[in-house]
Image (cartoon, rainbow, N blue to C red):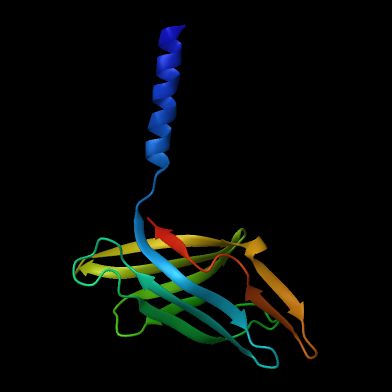
Amino acid sequence: MQIFAILSSAAVASAAVMAKRDIIFKVSDFSAGCVAHSTQCLYYFNVTQPGSPGAPDVPVTCKALVTANNDGTLPDVDDGTCLESARTWTALHADAGITLALSQQVSPASYETGSHLLASNEFTISNETNAKVQSYTGPTAFDLVD
Protein backbone atom coordinates (compact mmCIF):
# COMPACT_ATOMS: atom_id res chain seq x y z
CA MET A 1 0.00 0.00 0.00
CA GLN A 2 2.81 2.42 0.88
CA ILE A 3 4.65 1.62 -2.34
CA PHE A 4 1.50 2.42 -4.33
CA ALA A 5 1.20 5.77 -2.51
CA ILE A 6 4.86 6.59 -3.20
CA LEU A 7 4.57 5.65 -6.87
CA SER A 8 1.33 7.61 -7.19
CA SER A 9 2.92 10.71 -5.62
CA ALA A 10 5.94 10.38 -7.91
CA ALA A 11 3.68 10.17 -10.98
CA VAL A 12 1.77 13.30 -9.93
CA ALA A 13 5.01 15.20 -9.28
CA SER A 14 6.42 14.06 -12.63
CA ALA A 15 3.28 15.20 -14.46
CA ALA A 16 3.43 18.60 -12.75
CA VAL A 17 7.05 19.07 -13.84
CA MET A 18 6.24 18.05 -17.41
CA ALA A 19 3.26 20.45 -17.52
CA LYS A 20 5.39 23.44 -16.45
CA ARG A 21 6.18 25.65 -19.40
CA ASP A 22 8.97 28.22 -19.63
CA ILE A 23 8.08 31.90 -19.70
CA ILE A 24 9.62 33.31 -22.86
CA PHE A 25 8.11 36.82 -22.83
CA LYS A 26 5.94 38.92 -20.51
CA VAL A 27 3.14 41.03 -21.97
CA SER A 28 1.74 44.16 -20.32
CA ASP A 29 -0.78 46.83 -21.32
CA PHE A 30 -2.48 44.46 -23.77
CA SER A 31 -5.54 45.74 -25.58
CA ALA A 32 -7.38 44.76 -28.72
CA GLY A 33 -10.54 46.23 -30.10
CA CYS A 34 -12.35 47.52 -33.11
CA VAL A 35 -13.13 51.23 -33.32
CA ALA A 36 -16.80 52.22 -33.36
CA HIS A 37 -17.86 54.01 -36.57
CA SER A 38 -14.72 52.77 -38.32
CA THR A 39 -13.46 49.75 -40.21
CA GLN A 40 -10.27 49.57 -38.15
CA CYS A 41 -9.15 47.48 -35.17
CA LEU A 42 -6.08 48.01 -33.01
CA TYR A 43 -3.95 45.40 -31.27
CA TYR A 44 -1.49 46.98 -28.80
CA PHE A 45 0.85 45.62 -26.12
CA ASN A 46 4.26 45.98 -24.51
CA VAL A 47 6.60 43.02 -24.15
CA THR A 48 9.71 42.22 -22.11
CA GLN A 49 11.92 39.15 -22.07
CA PRO A 50 12.79 38.00 -18.55
CA GLY A 51 16.33 36.77 -18.12
CA SER A 52 17.63 38.23 -21.35
CA PRO A 53 21.01 39.95 -21.35
CA GLY A 54 21.10 43.67 -21.90
CA ALA A 55 17.86 45.38 -20.92
CA PRO A 56 15.34 42.62 -20.07
CA ASP A 57 12.95 44.96 -18.24
CA VAL A 58 12.77 47.62 -20.94
CA PRO A 59 9.45 47.06 -22.72
CA VAL A 60 9.15 46.98 -26.49
CA THR A 61 5.86 48.22 -27.96
CA CYS A 62 4.06 45.98 -30.46
CA LYS A 63 0.97 47.08 -32.37
CA ALA A 64 -1.06 46.69 -35.52
CA LEU A 65 -3.89 48.76 -36.98
CA VAL A 66 -5.86 46.36 -39.16
CA THR A 67 -9.13 46.22 -41.07
CA ALA A 68 -11.99 44.66 -39.10
CA ASN A 69 -13.76 41.55 -40.30
CA ASN A 70 -17.08 42.29 -42.07
CA ASP A 71 -18.98 41.41 -38.88
CA GLY A 72 -17.01 43.92 -36.74
CA THR A 73 -14.81 41.32 -35.09
CA LEU A 74 -11.06 41.37 -34.66
CA PRO A 75 -9.22 39.92 -37.66
CA ASP A 76 -6.21 37.63 -37.68
CA VAL A 77 -2.81 39.31 -37.73
CA ASP A 78 -0.08 37.26 -39.37
CA ASP A 79 2.59 39.93 -39.74
CA GLY A 80 2.60 42.00 -36.55
CA THR A 81 5.73 43.98 -35.72
CA CYS A 82 7.28 45.61 -32.68
CA LEU A 83 8.78 49.10 -32.68
CA GLU A 84 12.58 49.25 -32.76
CA SER A 85 12.79 45.46 -32.51
CA ALA A 86 13.15 42.44 -34.77
CA ARG A 87 10.41 40.63 -32.84
CA THR A 88 7.33 39.65 -34.82
CA TRP A 89 3.92 38.43 -33.70
CA THR A 90 0.68 36.85 -34.81
CA ALA A 91 -2.89 36.83 -33.49
CA LEU A 92 -4.73 33.87 -34.98
CA HIS A 93 -8.29 32.71 -34.34
CA ALA A 94 -8.93 29.20 -33.03
CA ASP A 95 -12.05 27.55 -31.65
CA ALA A 96 -11.12 28.50 -28.08
CA GLY A 97 -10.23 32.15 -28.82
CA ILE A 98 -7.27 34.00 -30.33
CA THR A 99 -3.70 32.73 -29.90
CA LEU A 100 -1.16 35.53 -29.51
CA ALA A 101 2.35 34.34 -30.44
CA LEU A 102 5.57 36.35 -30.47
CA SER A 103 8.88 35.27 -32.04
CA GLN A 104 12.45 36.43 -31.94
CA GLN A 105 15.29 35.09 -34.03
CA VAL A 106 18.13 33.78 -31.86
CA SER A 107 20.38 32.35 -34.57
CA PRO A 108 20.30 32.17 -38.37
CA ALA A 109 18.39 28.90 -38.14
CA SER A 110 16.26 29.19 -34.98
CA TYR A 111 13.60 31.29 -33.32
CA GLU A 112 12.39 31.63 -29.77
CA THR A 113 8.58 31.74 -29.61
CA GLY A 114 6.08 32.15 -26.82
CA SER A 115 2.29 32.11 -27.01
CA HIS A 116 -0.86 32.68 -24.97
CA LEU A 117 -4.50 31.87 -25.64
CA LEU A 118 -6.85 34.81 -25.31
CA ALA A 119 -10.00 32.85 -24.46
CA SER A 120 -13.26 33.47 -26.30
CA ASN A 121 -14.97 34.55 -23.06
CA GLU A 122 -12.43 37.39 -22.73
CA PHE A 123 -13.98 39.23 -25.69
CA THR A 124 -17.22 41.18 -25.93
CA ILE A 125 -19.23 42.45 -28.86
CA SER A 126 -21.08 45.71 -28.35
CA ASN A 127 -23.86 47.02 -30.57
CA GLU A 128 -22.97 50.54 -31.61
CA THR A 129 -25.27 52.81 -33.58
CA ASN A 130 -23.90 51.80 -36.98
CA ALA A 131 -22.18 48.51 -36.29
CA LYS A 132 -21.13 45.76 -33.93
CA VAL A 133 -17.60 46.03 -32.57
CA GLN A 134 -15.49 43.49 -30.72
CA SER A 135 -13.05 44.25 -27.92
CA TYR A 136 -10.85 42.32 -25.51
CA THR A 137 -11.86 42.51 -21.85
CA GLY A 138 -9.48 39.96 -20.30
CA PRO A 139 -6.26 40.46 -18.29
CA THR A 140 -3.90 43.11 -19.67
CA ALA A 141 -0.77 41.35 -18.37
CA PHE A 142 0.15 37.71 -19.01
CA ASP A 143 3.04 35.43 -19.93
CA LEU A 144 3.90 34.03 -23.35
CA VAL A 145 5.13 30.49 -22.81
CA ASP A 146 6.80 27.88 -24.99
